[in-house]
Image (cartoon, rainbow, N blue to C red; front, side):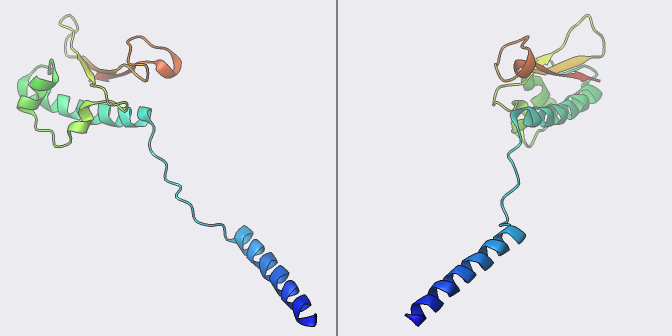
Length: 126
């Protein structure tokens, strides 16, 4: 009987010590979160803008589309051609606005002119 009491007491003490250690030294968790679609889109727009600026400095005009861009500027990571939702980034070049272009993602809803979380993401060059 005495052995049983000592065993129970030892188990209770070990459990308390383990519980305290867990509070003092929390387990390491993977705190790296996957970037949001919006963050990925901004990153891709920035990289694509640099490629468009390179095209503009070589050709003297903005690239009207992806095909034109790729014929002049080699792009190693073609993932920059799509937004965070996996849809193509739109090139907008207006002939009546000199020396300017826009790169556009239609956002989460994939439709132009969204609002709030569905808003378009527009990157103006230069």
